[in-house]
Length: 405
Ligand SMILES: *Cc1c(COP(=O)(O)O)cnc(C)c1O
Image: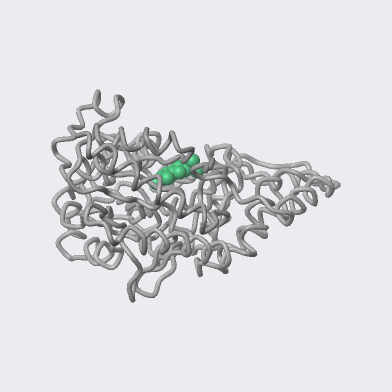
């Protein structure tokens, strides 16, 4: 049986929505992008949403707007996809990496220890779709001592008056924590709409603006829209209208707008997102039920009263194995036709970051998670039979590799 790791969800409704965009004669940023932005705002409760062409570009835009100066620091977990840290570097800041908890979320005590007078933002990452402890992070940045240490060097920084929380919600569309939907837990919350993510536009990102008073999210939305179009005051649709040719460039923006053709894919998925999430949940709990009988299986964090996942990744860990045994188990599973993955190689182990002086020895939980982690396929299209096949492949691979040890 051939089981891919994460194929996109493309049904007739998605195809028809894209065809509709093509036939409309308008393929770049226009009505479908607007409908997607409004739909995500409605689904998550975020006050305003700006669609862009990736999570990465959305994070760079947000951090540039925050006004990072040379030497400014942004705290990120060591255990994430490299884009989290690279967006900080692209916006002129220094990523300060901290370790994670056993549930793979960023360690809030480690954040506290890493805060300095140069800290301008924290980028918590909801790895696998499991929300970070936002209540604790919000309390932390509002502590009088921490606020006092904050040194504002830009208008935006003066206005917020504390460390900004920009959540990397690349995985967590549809997850909830403490009665809040992802998209509303940080000051800015960014979803990735990349092809492997829960909700996708092939490539894309959605910036959820949830800025506190005195910010006006409506006004910041308009600014971000302009900044995503090279700083141009009119988008292509406005300029295409008769007599609408004149425009101005009011700031040094980026060119990162989302095309309507892409928005169409996500728009059709969004309409049935409750169903898609329910199907992911089915797969997630089928794995949990089957694997909980093995004492070697460390299951990912499971829903509880105040915290629910978006079931983006099934991050299984295996007790008592070495990195090379993990690799052999993956090879053995691949022989059966099942594609699995590892989330993540901690950033300090990647050449770029190693060369910059980051040292994996400072992140023991990230390292320990990495060596024993195997991500199992999880998506709505997986049938129960396929899930059982994956479980069987894993069990056989484990037995074979560990008995030959
Ligand atoms: C996918 C991903 C990103 C980057 O998203 P793009 O839309 O590809 O830029 C960032 N952070 C995490 C945790 C991701 O998984």
